[in-house]
Length: 468
Image 1 (tube, helix red, strand yellow):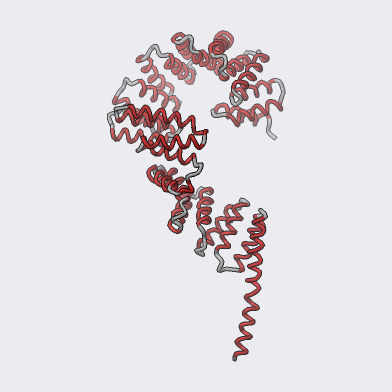
Image 2 (spheres, rainbow, N blue to C red):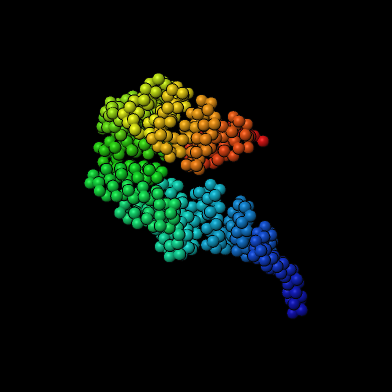
């Protein structure tokens, strides 16, 4: 009997030992390959080890890490989910699984994974940083702020996380503006790229602190956020202002403007503002801007004309009137409006530049109006790259190509990242069959442009002349 038992044990050992030995060898080979940076070979060996050592769920996490390193994201997710099912996922694995799901636009799944990971590893505070991403996406600002503050409660997170200090400062502007400035200034100290926007926000915070009117205070804070492109947060403040001060026409008007930037319907808010104060210039100008964006130039003209009736000597409104007329295709009154703006502020180069831009865009009296306006604008502001570029554009349209090229090159000396100058230089080089130079200029215009019009023009020319 004992002999039979011994024989069975030996047979079982012979059956079981080879897979265990081979699995261990695969695991060691995976570790060696990982240390050498050969993640593909590491993944293959870890996967063989996991199949031969089925009780080692942690090996599937190793497979997921390696698959992720070589860009096999879906395979990485599958491997990490197996490790999760085996209850073998480490805090790093939970985090990575959430990140991979987020990158695949499975945001709710990622949020659930990070929440579970935080419950399993509450000391791993980086999960709060991840959760903040989701709260930001859905607009749950209090939850986002709370998550970032939890993340910063970890001393290890007190490094150069300038972007999170900046974000926390923005969120504090919603309900704790006195505390916001410290976070914003810290962000600027940690990363100088934040300095310009922080200075803008600092000005808004300072002005708001001096404002005695509660609605006015909130509007100043919201406008500060809008100035740095944070329209969703700005809309939150403007919404709060309309709830707390429903009689504030300005709050309704700014809420309408914010909604235009975040995909909402602004017209009810703008109409509400006008019903409260029909002759407030801010409101009429914002609604005129709304109609212009909608392509309803007739209604845009109605509002801007009311603005001008309230401030007839304001050159800015005259130029705005000219722009609306031009967009509507009514060029004679557009020209008259631009010229009126210049007559109101003859020493301001901006209005001469706007006239020259109108002239060259719509080919209106280029030699008699556009060229003198562009030359005078540059005479009044000789170091302005944009004015120099526009003068070059006028020269190019008039066939004065040598002067045009000189102007474009001078504009780029003044501002090496001026996309419109590269676009116009690309036009010039195409005209003179310098295709290689044209290609280089148009690529620069495409890559540097912050304006949709310039980027679209550059792409159109690249597609027309340089398709492979």
